[in-house]
Length: 409
Image (cartoon, rainbow, N blue to C red; front, top):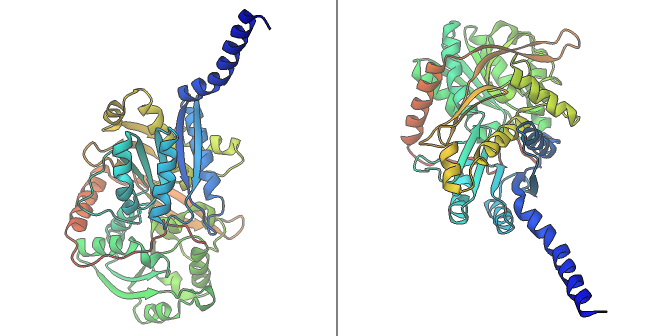
Protein backbone atom coordinates (compact mmCIF):
# COMPACT_ATOMS: atom_id res chain seq x y z
CA UNK A 1 0.00 0.00 0.00
CA UNK A 2 1.33 3.48 -0.90
CA UNK A 3 2.51 5.49 2.14
CA UNK A 4 -0.05 8.29 1.50
CA UNK A 5 -2.85 5.74 1.35
CA UNK A 6 -1.55 4.14 4.56
CA UNK A 7 -1.74 7.53 6.35
CA UNK A 8 -5.21 8.19 4.95
CA UNK A 9 -6.35 4.73 6.04
CA UNK A 10 -4.95 5.18 9.56
CA UNK A 11 -6.65 8.58 9.93
CA UNK A 12 -9.95 7.07 8.82
CA UNK A 13 -9.63 4.23 11.35
CA UNK A 14 -8.79 6.65 14.17
CA UNK A 15 -11.84 8.75 13.25
CA UNK A 16 -14.05 5.66 13.21
CA UNK A 17 -12.78 4.65 16.64
CA UNK A 18 -13.07 8.08 18.24
CA UNK A 19 -16.41 9.13 16.73
CA UNK A 20 -18.58 6.98 19.07
CA UNK A 21 -16.59 8.25 22.06
CA UNK A 22 -17.01 11.86 20.99
CA UNK A 23 -20.73 11.32 20.39
CA UNK A 24 -21.23 9.67 23.79
CA UNK A 25 -19.46 12.54 25.53
CA UNK A 26 -21.90 14.99 23.95
CA UNK A 27 -24.89 12.98 25.10
CA UNK A 28 -26.16 13.69 28.62
CA UNK A 29 -26.15 10.58 30.76
CA UNK A 30 -28.88 10.24 33.38
CA UNK A 31 -28.89 7.51 36.00
CA UNK A 32 -31.96 5.92 37.53
CA UNK A 33 -31.96 3.74 40.64
CA UNK A 34 -34.78 1.25 40.21
CA UNK A 35 -36.34 -0.66 43.10
CA UNK A 36 -38.39 -3.83 42.91
CA UNK A 37 -41.55 -4.75 44.75
CA UNK A 38 -43.70 -7.84 44.82
CA UNK A 39 -46.59 -5.59 45.85
CA UNK A 40 -46.11 -3.06 43.05
CA UNK A 41 -44.75 -5.43 40.43
CA UNK A 42 -44.44 -2.83 37.64
CA UNK A 43 -42.66 -0.24 39.81
CA UNK A 44 -39.33 -0.59 37.95
CA UNK A 45 -40.92 0.08 34.56
CA UNK A 46 -43.15 2.79 36.03
CA UNK A 47 -40.10 4.76 37.12
CA UNK A 48 -38.22 4.17 33.87
CA UNK A 49 -41.07 5.00 31.51
CA UNK A 50 -42.10 8.01 33.59
CA UNK A 51 -38.62 9.47 33.19
CA UNK A 52 -38.42 8.62 29.48
CA UNK A 53 -41.81 10.17 28.72
CA UNK A 54 -41.04 13.28 30.75
CA UNK A 55 -37.73 13.92 28.99
CA UNK A 56 -39.42 13.49 25.63
CA UNK A 57 -42.22 15.83 26.71
CA UNK A 58 -39.58 18.42 27.68
CA UNK A 59 -37.88 18.09 24.30
CA UNK A 60 -34.76 16.33 25.63
CA UNK A 61 -33.78 13.91 22.87
CA UNK A 62 -30.02 13.56 23.34
CA UNK A 63 -30.04 11.85 26.73
CA UNK A 64 -28.99 8.32 27.63
CA UNK A 65 -30.62 6.68 30.65
CA UNK A 66 -28.57 4.19 32.63
CA UNK A 67 -30.29 2.05 35.24
CA UNK A 68 -29.22 0.17 38.34
CA UNK A 69 -31.37 -2.16 40.42
CA UNK A 70 -31.45 -1.45 44.16
CA UNK A 71 -33.66 -4.29 45.37
CA UNK A 72 -36.16 -3.09 47.96
CA UNK A 73 -33.97 -0.07 48.73
CA UNK A 74 -32.86 -1.43 52.08
CA UNK A 75 -29.08 -1.60 51.51
CA UNK A 76 -27.27 1.72 51.64
CA UNK A 77 -24.05 -0.04 50.67
CA UNK A 78 -25.56 -1.38 47.45
CA UNK A 79 -27.09 2.00 46.60
CA UNK A 80 -23.78 3.77 47.21
CA UNK A 81 -21.97 1.29 44.95
CA UNK A 82 -24.56 1.68 42.19
CA UNK A 83 -24.29 5.49 42.30
CA UNK A 84 -20.48 5.40 42.38
CA UNK A 85 -20.32 3.14 39.32
CA UNK A 86 -22.63 5.39 37.29
CA UNK A 87 -20.74 8.52 38.32
CA UNK A 88 -17.45 6.92 37.28
CA UNK A 89 -19.06 6.28 33.88
CA UNK A 90 -19.87 9.97 33.41
CA UNK A 91 -23.47 10.20 34.59
CA UNK A 92 -24.35 13.80 35.49
CA UNK A 93 -27.73 13.26 37.16
CA UNK A 94 -29.10 10.32 39.12
CA UNK A 95 -32.69 9.97 40.26
CA UNK A 96 -33.70 7.31 42.74
CA UNK A 97 -36.58 6.18 44.95
CA UNK A 98 -34.71 6.08 48.27
CA UNK A 99 -35.16 6.83 51.95
CA UNK A 100 -34.01 10.21 53.34
CA UNK A 101 -31.27 8.57 55.43
CA UNK A 102 -29.93 6.95 52.26
CA UNK A 103 -29.88 10.29 50.45
CA UNK A 104 -27.95 11.74 53.37
CA UNK A 105 -25.45 8.88 53.26
CA UNK A 106 -24.68 9.26 49.54
CA UNK A 107 -24.56 13.06 49.61
CA UNK A 108 -20.73 13.34 49.89
CA UNK A 109 -20.43 11.19 46.77
CA UNK A 110 -22.38 13.75 44.76
CA UNK A 111 -20.67 16.76 46.31
CA UNK A 112 -17.26 15.33 45.45
CA UNK A 113 -18.22 14.21 41.94
CA UNK A 114 -20.00 17.43 41.04
CA UNK A 115 -23.18 15.59 40.06
CA UNK A 116 -26.82 16.04 41.12
CA UNK A 117 -29.07 13.50 42.83
CA UNK A 118 -32.87 13.73 42.68
CA UNK A 119 -34.42 11.84 45.58
CA UNK A 120 -37.90 10.48 44.88
CA UNK A 121 -39.86 10.05 48.07
CA UNK A 122 -43.27 8.80 49.19
CA UNK A 123 -42.98 11.04 52.25
CA UNK A 124 -43.49 8.19 54.71
CA UNK A 125 -40.04 8.57 56.27
CA UNK A 126 -38.49 11.65 57.84
CA UNK A 127 -34.98 13.01 57.52
CA UNK A 128 -32.75 13.87 60.47
CA UNK A 129 -33.26 17.52 61.47
CA UNK A 130 -29.53 18.16 60.98
CA UNK A 131 -29.58 16.98 57.35
CA UNK A 132 -28.98 19.84 54.90
CA UNK A 133 -29.24 18.77 51.28
CA UNK A 134 -26.32 19.64 49.03
CA UNK A 135 -26.29 18.55 45.37
CA UNK A 136 -29.53 16.74 46.26
CA UNK A 137 -33.13 17.75 45.55
CA UNK A 138 -36.15 15.85 46.86
CA UNK A 139 -39.49 15.36 45.13
CA UNK A 140 -41.94 14.08 47.73
CA UNK A 141 -45.56 12.92 47.83
CA UNK A 142 -45.70 14.31 51.41
CA UNK A 143 -47.32 11.22 52.92
CA UNK A 144 -46.66 12.11 56.56
CA UNK A 145 -47.78 15.70 55.99
CA UNK A 146 -51.02 14.42 54.47
CA UNK A 147 -51.60 12.29 57.57
CA UNK A 148 -51.02 15.31 59.78
CA UNK A 149 -53.71 17.24 57.93
CA UNK A 150 -56.37 14.55 58.32
CA UNK A 151 -57.36 15.19 61.97
CA UNK A 152 -58.03 18.85 61.17
CA UNK A 153 -60.28 17.82 58.27
CA UNK A 154 -61.95 15.28 60.56
CA UNK A 155 -62.56 17.93 63.23
CA UNK A 156 -64.36 20.06 60.65
CA UNK A 157 -66.72 17.11 60.19
CA UNK A 158 -67.26 16.89 63.95
CA UNK A 159 -64.87 14.03 64.79
CA UNK A 160 -62.51 14.37 67.77
CA UNK A 161 -62.07 10.83 69.10
CA UNK A 162 -60.27 8.30 66.94
CA UNK A 163 -59.33 4.65 66.80
CA UNK A 164 -56.11 4.14 64.85
CA UNK A 165 -55.52 0.98 62.82
CA UNK A 166 -52.44 0.17 60.79
CA UNK A 167 -51.00 -2.76 58.90
CA UNK A 168 -47.93 -4.32 60.50
CA UNK A 169 -45.97 -3.04 57.50
CA UNK A 170 -47.19 0.57 57.75
CA UNK A 171 -46.46 0.66 61.46
CA UNK A 172 -42.76 0.81 60.56
CA UNK A 173 -43.15 4.13 58.74
CA UNK A 174 -44.38 7.61 59.66
CA UNK A 175 -48.12 7.67 58.97
CA UNK A 176 -48.83 7.23 62.69
CA UNK A 177 -46.47 10.09 63.56
CA UNK A 178 -48.35 12.40 61.18
CA UNK A 179 -51.78 11.31 62.40
CA UNK A 180 -50.88 11.57 66.08
CA UNK A 181 -49.23 14.99 65.74
CA UNK A 182 -52.31 16.23 63.92
CA UNK A 183 -54.56 14.88 66.66
CA UNK A 184 -52.46 16.62 69.33
CA UNK A 185 -52.54 19.89 67.38
CA UNK A 186 -56.32 20.15 67.60
CA UNK A 187 -56.69 18.75 71.11
CA UNK A 188 -58.35 15.54 69.99
CA UNK A 189 -57.77 12.03 71.27
CA UNK A 190 -56.53 8.64 70.06
CA UNK A 191 -58.72 6.32 72.10
CA UNK A 192 -57.60 2.99 70.66
CA UNK A 193 -54.62 1.57 68.75
CA UNK A 194 -54.72 -1.54 66.60
CA UNK A 195 -51.89 -3.06 64.53
CA UNK A 196 -52.74 -6.01 62.30
CA UNK A 197 -50.48 -9.05 62.43
CA UNK A 198 -47.59 -9.74 60.08
CA UNK A 199 -48.99 -12.79 58.31
CA UNK A 200 -51.92 -12.38 55.96
CA UNK A 201 -53.49 -15.56 57.31
CA UNK A 202 -53.64 -13.94 60.76
CA UNK A 203 -55.34 -10.73 59.59
CA UNK A 204 -58.31 -9.62 61.67
CA UNK A 205 -60.07 -6.39 62.68
CA UNK A 206 -61.97 -8.03 65.53
CA UNK A 207 -60.34 -6.02 68.38
CA UNK A 208 -61.05 -2.76 66.51
CA UNK A 209 -64.61 -3.81 65.69
CA UNK A 210 -65.32 -4.70 69.32
CA UNK A 211 -64.04 -1.33 70.48
CA UNK A 212 -66.13 0.58 67.95
CA UNK A 213 -69.29 -1.23 68.99
CA UNK A 214 -68.77 0.05 72.53
CA UNK A 215 -67.75 3.55 71.39
CA UNK A 216 -70.20 4.66 68.72
CA UNK A 217 -68.92 8.24 68.48
CA UNK A 218 -65.35 7.20 67.60
CA UNK A 219 -63.99 7.69 64.08
CA UNK A 220 -61.35 5.49 62.46
CA UNK A 221 -57.94 6.47 61.08
CA UNK A 222 -56.27 3.83 58.92
CA UNK A 223 -52.88 3.28 57.31
CA UNK A 224 -52.28 0.53 54.75
CA UNK A 225 -51.06 -0.01 51.21
CA UNK A 226 -51.27 -2.51 48.38
CA UNK A 227 -52.93 -5.83 49.12
CA UNK A 228 -53.12 -4.78 52.78
CA UNK A 229 -55.72 -2.21 51.72
CA UNK A 230 -57.71 -5.08 50.19
CA UNK A 231 -57.55 -6.92 53.52
CA UNK A 232 -58.60 -3.81 55.42
CA UNK A 233 -61.54 -2.90 53.21
CA UNK A 234 -62.61 -6.52 52.80
CA UNK A 235 -62.89 -6.89 56.58
CA UNK A 236 -64.80 -3.62 56.84
CA UNK A 237 -67.17 -4.64 54.05
CA UNK A 238 -68.03 -7.80 55.98
CA UNK A 239 -68.90 -5.94 59.19
CA UNK A 240 -71.84 -3.51 59.24
CA UNK A 241 -70.38 -1.67 62.24
CA UNK A 242 -68.02 0.30 59.98
CA UNK A 243 -70.92 1.97 58.18
CA UNK A 244 -71.71 3.74 61.48
CA UNK A 245 -68.33 5.46 61.79
CA UNK A 246 -66.43 8.04 59.77
CA UNK A 247 -63.24 6.58 58.29
CA UNK A 248 -60.10 8.56 57.44
CA UNK A 249 -57.12 7.13 55.63
CA UNK A 250 -53.46 7.78 54.92
CA UNK A 251 -52.61 8.79 51.33
CA UNK A 252 -51.35 5.37 50.21
CA UNK A 253 -54.65 3.74 51.12
CA UNK A 254 -55.87 5.76 48.14
CA UNK A 255 -53.13 4.55 45.75
CA UNK A 256 -55.30 3.93 42.71
CA UNK A 257 -53.75 0.79 41.19
CA UNK A 258 -54.62 -1.27 44.26
CA UNK A 259 -57.65 0.79 45.21
CA UNK A 260 -59.37 -0.26 41.98
CA UNK A 261 -59.07 -3.89 43.19
CA UNK A 262 -60.30 -3.18 46.72
CA UNK A 263 -63.88 -3.96 47.78
CA UNK A 264 -65.92 -0.95 48.82
CA UNK A 265 -65.90 -0.95 52.66
CA UNK A 266 -69.57 -0.01 52.94
CA UNK A 267 -68.97 3.67 53.62
CA UNK A 268 -67.01 6.46 51.96
CA UNK A 269 -63.47 7.08 53.20
CA UNK A 270 -61.90 10.53 53.54
CA UNK A 271 -58.24 11.02 52.67
CA UNK A 272 -55.63 13.52 51.49
CA UNK A 273 -53.56 12.85 48.37
CA UNK A 274 -50.79 14.54 46.43
CA UNK A 275 -52.13 13.38 43.08
CA UNK A 276 -55.02 11.55 41.45
CA UNK A 277 -55.78 10.46 37.91
CA UNK A 278 -59.00 12.47 38.13
CA UNK A 279 -57.27 15.85 38.54
CA UNK A 280 -58.60 17.97 35.69
CA UNK A 281 -55.37 19.63 34.60
CA UNK A 282 -53.81 19.80 31.11
CA UNK A 283 -50.47 18.72 32.54
CA UNK A 284 -52.08 15.70 34.18
CA UNK A 285 -53.76 14.71 30.94
CA UNK A 286 -50.41 14.98 29.14
CA UNK A 287 -48.80 12.78 31.79
CA UNK A 288 -51.53 10.15 31.60
CA UNK A 289 -51.38 10.17 27.79
CA UNK A 290 -47.60 9.85 27.86
CA UNK A 291 -47.76 6.81 30.10
CA UNK A 292 -50.55 5.34 27.98
CA UNK A 293 -48.29 5.60 24.93
CA UNK A 294 -45.96 3.19 26.79
CA UNK A 295 -48.90 0.89 27.56
CA UNK A 296 -48.71 1.89 31.21
CA UNK A 297 -51.26 3.19 33.70
CA UNK A 298 -50.07 6.43 35.29
CA UNK A 299 -49.44 6.10 39.01
CA UNK A 300 -47.62 7.82 41.87
CA UNK A 301 -44.29 6.20 40.96
CA UNK A 302 -44.27 7.28 37.33
CA UNK A 303 -45.45 10.69 38.56
CA UNK A 304 -42.28 11.11 40.63
CA UNK A 305 -39.96 10.18 37.79
CA UNK A 306 -41.95 12.40 35.39
CA UNK A 307 -41.26 15.31 37.74
CA UNK A 308 -37.60 14.27 37.96
CA UNK A 309 -37.41 14.62 34.19
CA UNK A 310 -38.66 18.19 34.47
CA UNK A 311 -35.89 18.99 36.98
CA UNK A 312 -33.25 17.45 34.72
CA UNK A 313 -34.53 19.44 31.73
CA UNK A 314 -34.33 22.67 33.74
CA UNK A 315 -30.83 21.92 35.02
CA UNK A 316 -29.62 21.21 31.48
CA UNK A 317 -30.14 24.87 30.65
CA UNK A 318 -26.71 25.31 32.29
CA UNK A 319 -23.44 23.45 31.83
CA UNK A 320 -21.75 24.00 35.19
CA UNK A 321 -22.99 22.10 38.25
CA UNK A 322 -23.08 25.22 40.44
CA UNK A 323 -25.21 26.99 37.84
CA UNK A 324 -27.47 23.95 37.56
CA UNK A 325 -28.02 23.93 41.31
CA UNK A 326 -28.78 27.66 41.22
CA UNK A 327 -31.37 27.05 38.50
CA UNK A 328 -33.13 24.40 40.56
CA UNK A 329 -33.20 26.42 43.78
CA UNK A 330 -36.58 28.18 43.95
CA UNK A 331 -37.51 26.60 40.61
CA UNK A 332 -41.26 26.29 40.11
CA UNK A 333 -43.14 24.32 37.50
CA UNK A 334 -46.68 23.22 36.86
CA UNK A 335 -46.87 19.45 36.62
CA UNK A 336 -49.55 16.76 36.76
CA UNK A 337 -50.40 17.50 40.39
CA UNK A 338 -50.20 21.29 40.10
CA UNK A 339 -47.55 23.86 40.96
CA UNK A 340 -44.37 22.44 42.49
CA UNK A 341 -41.71 24.70 43.98
CA UNK A 342 -38.24 23.63 45.08
CA UNK A 343 -37.44 25.33 48.37
CA UNK A 344 -34.13 27.18 48.05
CA UNK A 345 -33.07 26.52 51.63
CA UNK A 346 -34.08 22.88 52.03
CA UNK A 347 -34.07 21.62 48.40
CA UNK A 348 -37.39 19.91 49.17
CA UNK A 349 -40.42 20.12 46.91
CA UNK A 350 -43.47 22.03 48.08
CA UNK A 351 -46.59 20.96 46.26
CA UNK A 352 -50.36 20.91 46.60
CA UNK A 353 -52.43 18.36 48.49
CA UNK A 354 -56.04 17.50 47.77
CA UNK A 355 -58.91 16.38 49.94
CA UNK A 356 -60.28 13.24 48.32
CA UNK A 357 -62.93 10.62 48.87
CA UNK A 358 -62.81 6.89 48.30
CA UNK A 359 -66.23 5.97 47.00
CA UNK A 360 -67.90 2.97 45.39
CA UNK A 361 -67.34 2.24 41.73
CA UNK A 362 -70.91 1.39 40.83
CA UNK A 363 -69.74 -0.52 37.76
CA UNK A 364 -68.08 -3.29 39.75
CA UNK A 365 -68.53 -2.68 43.49
CA UNK A 366 -64.87 -1.91 43.98
CA UNK A 367 -63.37 1.43 45.01
CA UNK A 368 -62.66 4.59 43.07
CA UNK A 369 -60.88 7.79 44.12
CA UNK A 370 -62.65 11.11 43.67
CA UNK A 371 -60.37 14.14 44.18
CA UNK A 372 -61.94 17.16 45.79
CA UNK A 373 -60.78 20.67 46.57
CA UNK A 374 -57.14 21.60 46.90
CA UNK A 375 -56.17 22.07 50.54
CA UNK A 376 -55.56 25.73 51.32
CA UNK A 377 -51.92 26.54 50.51
CA UNK A 378 -51.47 28.63 53.65
CA UNK A 379 -52.71 25.72 55.76
CA UNK A 380 -50.24 23.34 54.09
CA UNK A 381 -47.39 25.79 54.67
CA UNK A 382 -48.31 26.11 58.34
CA UNK A 383 -48.63 22.34 58.80
CA UNK A 384 -45.29 21.83 57.08
CA UNK A 385 -43.60 24.29 59.43
CA UNK A 386 -45.16 22.60 62.44
CA UNK A 387 -44.11 19.17 61.21
CA UNK A 388 -40.53 20.35 60.70
CA UNK A 389 -40.55 21.75 64.25
CA UNK A 390 -41.96 18.52 65.68
CA UNK A 391 -39.34 16.46 63.86
CA UNK A 392 -36.57 18.75 65.10
CA UNK A 393 -37.70 18.26 68.69
CA UNK A 394 -38.18 14.50 68.69
CA UNK A 395 -37.01 12.95 71.92
CA UNK A 396 -35.64 9.42 72.13
CA UNK A 397 -34.69 6.91 69.46
CA UNK A 398 -36.51 6.66 66.14
CA UNK A 399 -36.70 3.34 64.31
CA UNK A 400 -38.17 2.25 61.00
CA UNK A 401 -37.99 -0.43 58.34
CA UNK A 402 -35.03 -0.15 56.00
CA UNK A 403 -37.10 -0.82 52.86
CA UNK A 404 -38.14 2.16 50.82
CA UNK A 405 -41.91 2.52 51.22
CA UNK A 406 -44.00 0.07 49.23
CA UNK A 407 -41.10 -2.18 48.24
CA UNK A 408 -41.28 -5.77 49.48
CA UNK A 409 -39.73 -9.02 48.31
